[in-house]
Image (tube, rainbow, N blue to C red):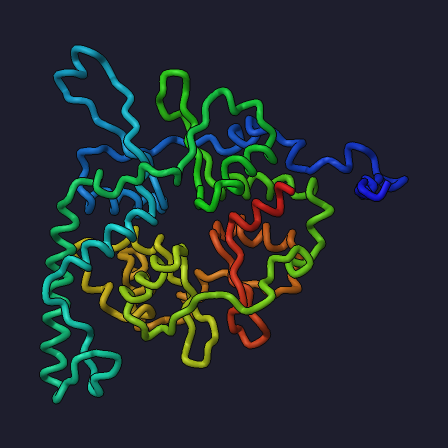
Length: 376
């Protein structure tokens, strides 16, 4: 029949392959198993907190995000008891957006000065004038930071689909279904965490992409078919170089603006020869003291060393590149997938840069990319 279409024959299992072997390894693990492996004391932020207090709380615990809870009125609490009130998520992305909005509201903020007046910047005739211009900028950044820190934390809350809700109805799902429905197949939206609510609507636990990766790492032998394949074989290496970078001399605020414009959570930092020496991410904002906003006007290299109070105490040497680079995970396109999973799990990394033999970045692999492979 000329009108009929030839159907492609269904793939058959090899004589050495059982029906069980053909099933995705992720289908053999349940969501309940993952939840049991990552039980944690849930840390929440109160809606009455100020931004400065909340950022310090996140930095002290090395958290990238936390649920925001409505704190009941004391009188109502006595009469009605505790009332669960989930307001949303405060996370690194929403912090970045709020910081950029605050900086954009600074009045009469001129671009950083230089001696040549290049790229629309003010031309400076002498060193004294340059110092004065920089001092004026930093004063405005500092004042904006202090005002920002006094704002209520609810201004940072993200009520969008950046966080999915999990109830008892999801507990019967296998891991493959959970990853695909919650983290991978999200219509272009980046979902990094899911909150588990109990029957009373209270937060019982939360599951992040990192939690799933660490669970897989402890059961890596179940993904033996993937472990020895290279990341290039798994199409994790872009056909064309595609990684956004800035040189270390770039003002930090400009680097963050570039990240926000491209909707990415980190950006590679290179030297003038194009070699990767570090990575700036929105997570680096969690350790920023709101009274030190002027650091955002400093170079990325300086900010990565001194932008976080904890690192500043440990690192007294200006621009210690080895310290910055030690926090940046890299791999080669010939690396095996099992190694990549181990690297990300042990370093608690959210992204790994692919570099060539000259340490120049040619691509980047995120947790979302890895989960997509694991859930095939």
